Length: 421
Image 1 (cartoon, one colour):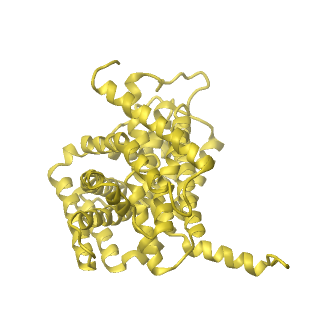
Image 2 (tube, helix red, strand yellow):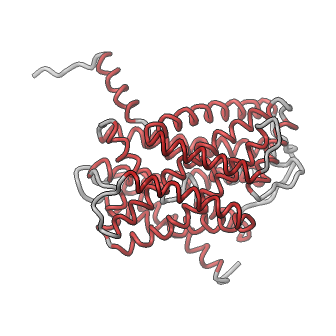
Image 3 (tube, one colour):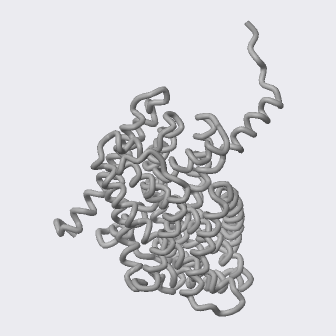
């Protein structure tokens, strides 16, 4: 029997099919690199230098199977992860829905505000922050209402390419200049109970909140309506997005470690103030010309995150409610109304509860991490059977990951209950 020999044409066709499948994974990356990367990763480097690099690597490594299982389950069965949760029991779907609705409002407000803060550094004239927040969220809504998934898919790819290129350029420049910290500088250590809340918040959104696995499965379904692709190509898309976000997390940590760590300036903990500090610090350390480069990186990052957060969280909220009410379909008009409600709710928080946004955001990050082991276990259960059931090294990694994530969550809960520390 003769076996077909791979030809350049076949190789090109395979790559074309993989490139056509790109979308959901890139959207996941775009949603991930906002709060967890631009803020948390860079702050980690700014405060602790390279000390938390291992924590970032482990968080990405041990969460990998559970994010992958979301895409894997949908690619294998054609069902969303939320449908899988319902099959396991409505209790789990209710829990996810409550967590997701809270995260939808808080995250929309947070990313809209951060994006508006960055715009104040980009625009050549002064505009009130509430007005800029309104413009950012309404523009994001307009893109989603009139462009639907196709435009969202295209925009996310452009933003991620620009973000990656500019970030790498910034890191290369920072390395060439050398670290700001003196060789004998001894910074604070994160290896104590006082820093546990910071580490838990960092891991909670590293590389993204666990609910993004359900969002990604929704995007896989939407992408397949536009362009049919194989199981293998779908996993390629997921891996590109996930591994890309893991690398970018370390790149952003490097930015903080090289530019701010040991500079003698206290690092701001509030997101908006921190972005301003980061841009100013770069201008001082690398050169004033870099202000626009860093501002562009931050704006591209947060605007892409704003669009994907509104779309992804709204889709999962609508789908969760549909499943809980046992409705057969969700009309596009219902999704459009839900997108508008998400935007309005974010604006309400911005205009009336702005002072509480920081605590709400921190609560959302910590709650996401504490609930991560539960939904990670559910995602594992959903791929324990079927043609592409999990096995071998991936299964071992998922078990080790569950132990690691559960251990950290229990440690944090014990500390909060005053059992020690």
